[in-house]
Length: 182
Figure (cartoon, rainbow, N blue to C red):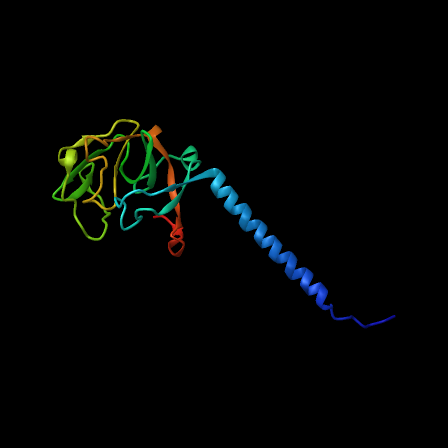
């Protein structure tokens, strides 16, 4: 009986490492396939979502997210506006009262604890008066509050639930800025 255990030769280690690399590539490819099959990649147009998103950024929109749950306050969403898709942030939910007073957003008479770059809203638009949202309406605004066409304008208006394509959750371009969208 031999007690000699040979050291694995170089070919065994090469096989193990090679299999590990192939497995990693497979799972990364599978993850990307799932993301892009269950989501949609869109290009951001304009700077209305600065500093969160800029013109020409590419983002992935989860189309399944809102099949499982309802949109929430401060979600960044993709919205169908005719032939265009725009990206905005939800601030008002169905049944709520939205108003902009002295540059700040109020929901049901309570100041919204969210701001971008410390700026206040200079143009309240139609939200200078109270806006009661319907049972399937959302009030959306761009993060670049003072350079955004959004629910404050008559042309854009409140967003119906069926206009919301999905939740924007991943920024994929530019490559140096890849990450989750908050």
